[in-house]
Length: 151
Image 1 (cartoon, rainbow, N blue to C red):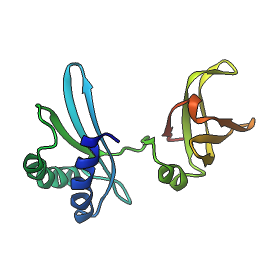
Image 2 (image 1 turned 90 degrees about the vertical axis):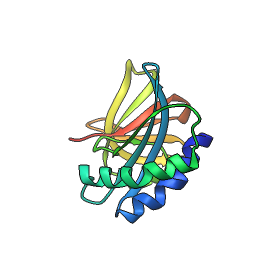
Image 3 (image 1 turned 135 degrees about the vertical axis):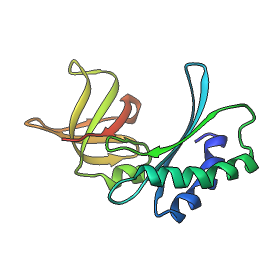
Image 4 (image 1 turned 180 degrees about the vertical axis):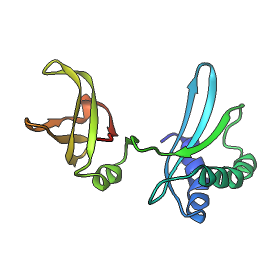
């Protein structure tokens, strides 16, 4: 993570936990010429709009006080989502056996996207069980991203 997202994560984690949620991710990205600071939260049974609002209301003044970002930005708190991106080893370990979509930088067997059950994760390499095709392993250098999928 970048310095900004590390600082924000450190501030956001206890706030999310105080509201019965866990901090899923923090991103600071530029989209269409504007900067966005996004805090993603999760909770068993799903995140409500009230959860997002409560975390946002408590976190906003703490971010103003810490001032980790010098310029202007839009601040958002939202659910990690049902089809969230898996990033950390702990994310992959938590969702072994779940349906995922693996997107690749370059085509393998003519395709840049594969869907299957997450079978293994080994230091960045992802292995999935594809319907009717056994297991496929994708090396870390080939994987552009992995998301949970809803069947």
